[in-house]
Image (tube, rainbow, N blue to C red; front, side, top):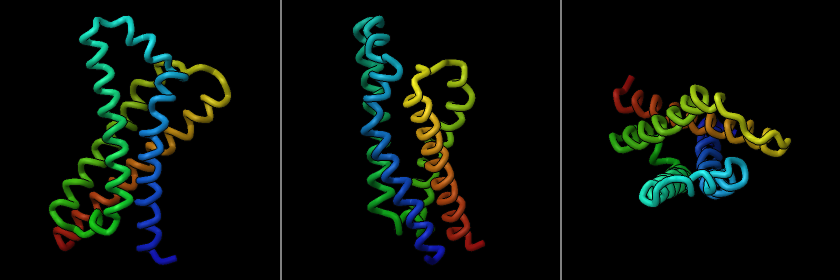
Length: 147
C-alpha cells in the first residue's frame, strides 16, 4: 500500500467514524447520560435550545463524515478551500478532544462494562478525527506555501 493510499484510508476511516458518531449520539445521550430527563428540568425554551444544539452536533458530525468520504482527494489538494475545511475540521475535533480531557473526567459515566469500553472507543475515534484533520491542515499548508 502506498503512502497516498494509506492517507486516503485514514481519511475515509475518519469519515466513516464521524458518521458513526452522528448515529450513535442519540443513544449515548439517552442510555449513558440520561440526557433527556435532565433536559426536561429546564425551562421550555432552554429545552428546545439544548435539543437544537444536540441536533447541530449530530448534523455536523454526519456532514463532516460525508465530506471526508466523498472529497478525500480534494481535502488534500492544497487549495485555499482545502485549508479552510481542514482547519475547521481540525479545530472542531481538537476542541472536542481538549474538552473531553479538561472537563469530562470530572463526571462519571455509568460503570457498566459496555459503557466503559464505549468511552475508550469513542475517545479513540475523537483522537483519530483530530489527528487526521490536523495532518490534513498541515499537509495543505505545506502544499499551499510550497514548502
